[in-house]
Amino acid sequence: MKKHLSYSEITNWLENKGRELYGGHFKIFEEDYPIVYKLIAYFLKDEQACFQFDINLSKGILFSGPIGSGKTSLMSLMKFLTPAEYKFTIKPCRDISFEFIQDGYEVIHKYSKGQLYRSEPKIYCFDDLGLENNLKYYGNECNVMAEILLSRYDLFIRRRIQTHITTNLSASEIEMQYGNRVRSRMRELFNLIAFENTAGDKR
Image (tube, rainbow, N blue to C red; front, top):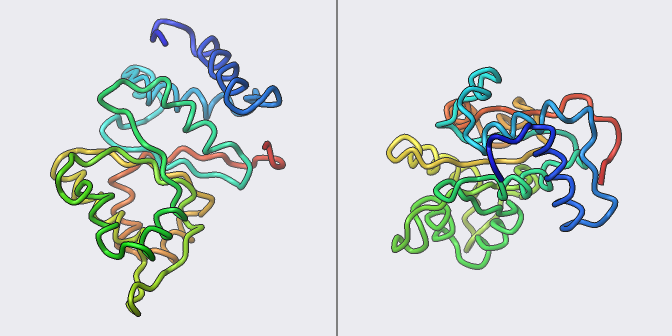
């Protein structure tokens, strides 16, 4: 994907790619173009457009909106625009919670410091933050994603490694579920891109 293409052309290309991946019903709605253009600018690292959109390229993306607004699909499509050094892996938060039940606290290190400390930390998009529950490992309860996000903040401060998130939660709901420390660090970690009044489920 070439950066010199117009954003409308890139959006059409993404829509066609979405039909390949998700079926002929896939559509990017015109009312969502402002959101999509912000994502395109960020993941193509278009500095001029990001300046206009007030997007900080050093931070990750917190992509919020109602259930069914297309957050996960759009983030999956953005992987096709992302330069190699910024490639990211999408990981559902519920899957991480199930890994914690199986493997315990090593899972927190896995998503912050690399698999068993032997590999470089990856850029992750934690999908559907808020759907997982506080879980117990050998009787000890842990807010797994809160711990991972705090570790990802340390990773960002030390090494500028980004994190992305999709969520249905509002800022106040995030604070209620994960605490004030997490919410305050999220302001430093993320650019907020949000669907506002999305009508209906678009899936």
